[in-house]
Length: 482
Ligand code: ADP
Ligand code: MG
Image (spheres, rainbow, N blue to C red):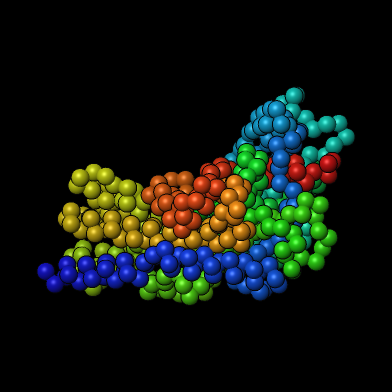
């Protein structure tokens, strides 16, 4: 029928507009490299903030002792304890505890919140066993992970610049997603412009705890540290989760905006905040434009809005909405649930995308459970899987292009004089971890862009839990006792 033809033409147009041939991705990678240079040249020189992390020493494996980490601002609020045994014994023991923030504190003062965090930390410290003590006369040390852009002023101080994961108002109000609730609450009341470490330190003192915040780290920097601890060839880290970001090791003399002393190591970790990347080469569609316009941070985090777990499901929903409106794919009226922003989450889209049953049972179930749509034809379910595929493929291929941009900046995207310098990229985040087709496509695209020869020297590694153990490792490598 004419309606089905209309649906197919919407699909074809989507496919065209989301197209990411190698040639285009190479332009994206080049643009990423150019923006990296600009962001390193001067403060505000680029959409890429290229934040100096003050991490000039990455873990080597020699670290010894008991270290703590606090992970605030991701999906979970956690406290961790890691017992490091040096080269031979590595991570002897690691323990963590998940702490939820009681609702009444969400309307309280910032001091109350920090007091709650500090007392949770104190309780956790009290569970140290007899064999797990810091050496006599030493202070306990903590790595503090905060996965939002912080303007660092030293390894252990910084202020929040802005909130990034643009949660929609509906999403915040309606969802049971802890992440989005916490986001709204942090943004509204507490952190913007505040010295997060200063506030935490004061609360730690009020709790009677003798502990120093040794490192304030972004989760990408933590992932880089965790990756490096396991593999000395790790040169960059990328997070593909609710949001997306990357960090990498830069030569300190290649950072014109750095006016401090050159670190002994000659290196400095840069938190790119690559989610805010944008370029005329990015394949933007009407759906992206509408999503951006309706977001809390229009015009910002454009790369993130095309790639990350916060948004992929929402892009799919917007396409299905258009097909429902203009091609009546779900009947004469648009299903009311389909009109609700962010109702279709990326894990749902991923489940539909991975449906291997001959009659696409999973797609049918998701449509029914989430969107209250029943009686769909197999043909229609196939169309929906196609939409998921187009959206995820674009995101995965753009992520690969971003990684190539970093490798280019480091001069590691090509083999020079038969050199066999290995470069490993550490990856983490729920999207990378759980969305198999996304991960596979991203990795394949990386090899496609790099070519056979250069690919031999590049590896991708899943570096788990950078926001936890990575932060503790950075507390160790920036300890006051070394
Ligand atoms: P955060 O980025 O908030 O620190 P994670 O790294 O754990 O948290 O990533 C969580 C995100 O990963 C979710 O918001 C979701 O978008 C994505 N995700 C989780 N599970 C899946 C899944 N099965 N398929 C696709 N995406 C998933
Ligand atoms: Mg995280």
